[in-house]
Length: 97
Image (cartoon, rainbow, N blue to C red):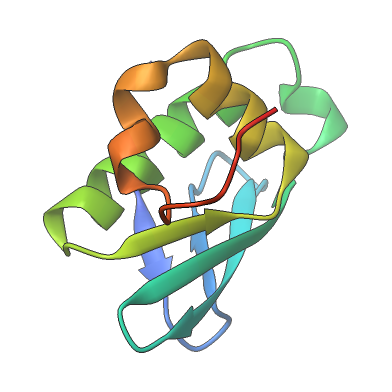
């Protein structure tokens, strides 16, 4: 599935619009740092790869904007642990357990 990533700056979240659902990753930006704080995928969309696709596109956007990532959300941290090529985005000194 190919979804269009929306950076909803007003709500401070990245989101997909899938029918009536809006899966999202909430964030806080401070200078060149971005804190991904919470991922939410509606029950109807779970198990379909939506969360994974969302994280991947968000990380790509962070990379393109040259931001430093602080992954506070366990789902995002787990994705990075499973896909270590994204670790270069993470603030030095932060250990992805």
